[in-house]
Every structure is written in structure tokens, then in C-alpha cells.
Amino acid sequence: MGKKISIVVSVYNEELGLQQFYDHTTPILQQAHENTGWDYELIFVNDGSKDTSLEILKEFAAQDEKVAVINFAANRGHEAAMIAGIDYAAGDGIVCMDADLQHPPESIPDIIKKFDEGYDVISMIRTARDDAGIIKRITSAAFYKVMNALSGKTKFENNSSDFFAISRRVAKVLRQDYRERVRFLRGYVQNVGFKKTTLEFRAQARVAGESNYNIKSLIKLSLNAICNFSDAPLKMGIYAGVFSILAAIILLIYSIVQYFLNKQPAGYSTIIVVLCVMFGVLFIILGFISEYLAIIFAEVKSRPIYIVDSVITKDGEEQK
Ligand code: UDP
Ligand code: MG
Image (cartoon, rainbow, N blue to C red):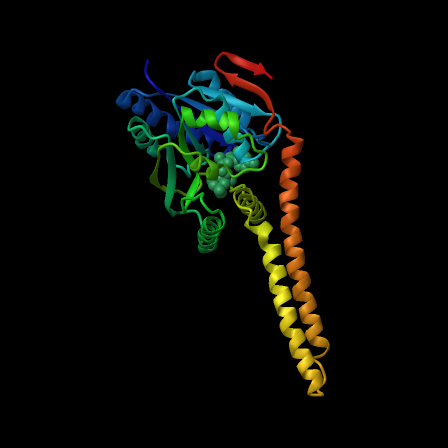
């Protein structure tokens, strides 16, 4: 039997661009089927859209047997949507991509080629991005620098994206063993092992609508990613403590000497500055400990990563 590729597309309020995505992607997949023998399925995960995205997706499913729609009971975020798609996918290879055509479907034939060459994890690397300003570029580069510095053995591709492809074997590992509530999906996909490779793509500007990520959610994502892959911040307390004691000893000696020289010890402003610095360090450390605590809390509660309302295919709608 021929092989099959599953395309997982997360959708949140994408009514303006969905038709274009579908019209653009389907011929590429059909062509790839003819050229490579890989059949396809197109899995849309509706992540609790508040616009008419679901109606549009239902129409796709009604006329196209290759389309399946997983409809969430509520918005759970992009990664949860990708995980649901991976759980559902039946293909030998799975490609996760955005619904806004920022991830070019033109790359899919190249991905299939990599699967045929025996690769299990294919990270798509952004070479250029038409959508992002200089600030986003710099912060994103800095983020990967920090991640790689802090995370020890695990290494991350710079400029990796939520556009990636995994084989059936990797999907199985994710389904069974990576059910983390707080996670950095593209990070652990790169670090499960197996045979890895990268492909390059140029990120286009969004076809329609607006980005759902804002500064707040990016900071949250970065913090979670760091706390997920590294325990370095937990050790900050020890370094800060050792440093403070050393500083205290030096200050003590200085003060004693000053006393015997009959000079006034340093005054009020010094105390205030030291106090502020010390409390600053203390609260940052406390903040990091709280981050880890929050992650543990979420894991211990072990609530579901996503909740499916219904699955829609050409055969009809199945309530969950
Ligand atoms: N998305 C989602 N759930 C969300 C937010 C976004 O499924 O809560 C989807 C969105 O529809 C898109 C992809 O995730 O297909 C990436 O989102 P977006 O384009 O807003 O992010 P950016 O490309 O700007 O990083
Ligand atoms: Mg986008």
C-alpha cells in the first residue's frame, strides 16, 4: 500500500484566509500524490474560533473526503491544536503548519522526499521573514541563544518554527510519552532523537487576518520554554547567595578599617542601593521558583491538553 502524509493545520479565527489556504494547498498535495505516490489527508483543528472558521471548514469536509475537522470545545492554544492533530493523524508522515500560508505548502514535496530518504524529524528553518520587524527578529535570535546556553545537552535550531514534520515513529513517542501540560513542542520534537534534518523556507506575510501572538504570550512562551528545558534558573539562588556573602565580607573588612581610621562609615544611600539590589535579586529568584511551581501544579492536576467537541468528515459529524 502507498504511503500517506497527514497535514495538520491549526485554525483560530482564520475565516479570511482559509479558502485561500485550501485552494492553494490542495493542488500541491494532489500533484505530490501523482509524483511521489504519497496520498494525503488534510486535518484542520479548529481551536475554538469565534468567527465563521468552523462553518468554512465544515464545507471543506462536506465536499472533500481528504479533509477532517477536529473541533475543540474551547480555545486551547496553537500547540494543543497541533498535538490533537498529531494524535488523530493516520499518516506515515505528519506535517504541522499554520493556516495563514506563512508556512508555504510548496515545501511539502521536499518534506516527502526527506521522508523517503528515511528521515524522522524535519525541522523547517526560516531563512527570511516577510512578516516580522527588526525587533521580533532580534528577540527571536536572542531567545535561541539563551535557550541553547541554558539547556545543556539539548540543542535547538535557530529560527526553527512551528512548521515541522515528523514520522509515524516520532508521532507515537509524542502520543504516548510527551503529554506535558506546559511544554515547548517544537523544542521537544527536535530532541526526541531519531534521524533529523532541516529544510529552509521563507516565511511569507500572513494572507489575511492578524497574528494571534502578542508580546505577552511570547514572553510566556519563552519563560515556559526555558523553565521546561533547563533547571539553571533554579540554581541562581546559590550563585546569588555566594556572591552576597563575598560582597558582605569585603564590606565588613572595609568598614572595620574605616572605623579604625576614625572615618564615618558609608551612609544612607549605600544602604538603600544595596537593599534594592538584594531584594531585586531575591524576588527574581522567587519568581523563577514560582514558575517551576506553577508548572508542577499544572502537571500534577493533569487536566486534558485539549477537549474535542466533535470530529467532522465527509461521513458526517461525530459528537465526542
Ligand atoms: N492558532 C491556534 N490557536 C491559537 C492561536 C493561533 O490554533 O490560540 C493558530 C492560527 O490560526 C495559525 C497558527 O496557530 O494557524 C499561528 O498563529 P499566528 O499566525 O497568529 O502566529 P504567528 O504566525 O504570528 O506566530
Ligand atoms: Mg502566522
